[in-house]
Image 1 (cartoon, rainbow, N blue to C red):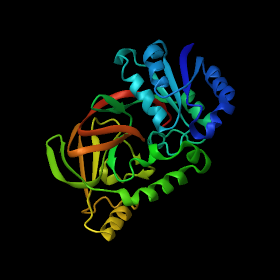
Image 2: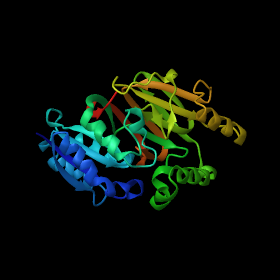
Image 3: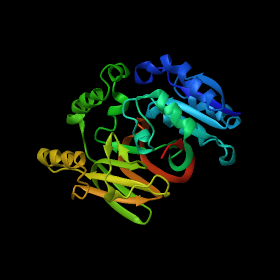
Length: 298
């Protein structure tokens, strides 16, 4: 029998997972796992539990939103690769970009649990932002603060609409950032209202088009930069191009690379997997190829 550590965020996704715990553990136990259940009590609790005990399990399963998953990635990456357990994910948050990219069922806890029991492990890349890890995106600029500034109660009540309302409120505060970006052997310096380094088919619920040739296990990040608009109308066109996935627009700069470095003129706030990532003047982002073994059904 295999050993599983099942950790969950009781506050994520309106707390619905608490009513399904028995069903979920039954699925795991019937699938041949001896299950240890651990509810997260505070920020970084889940990460620290994985660092402390994760190596003693064959599989670590986490349930929560993208922020909960970020904690899990940070915990797993602190375990030596040869001892690092496989990862299962039961999404219970609002956007769940990582789940969409990895064919993991959303808004259905029992289906996601069965997906873990019946699925297979695939290796995907992880990222490191200065001294912390992230699963699928590191970003700065327009709207990136929305996910961590949106009130949890509002998320629980109205879901994705809470993000939209917060984004509208943030419009007057969008400012350009002067930055030099070095992506492997490519370099660009300009003013940008947004910059993101991702390993995902989806970012903020928006699907990245085939032109970006996204692969989750090629050891490369996709780097998307949006140039600062010259006027409000130009800004509206840039947002429209982003929403409609018109990434060939001259408003965007797109690069791919293993190592991406950002050097800002002023300290700039970042978000990592939807969580606050700090305020810095220099960011060094590194791709760890096939570092995480995620269980899914292809």
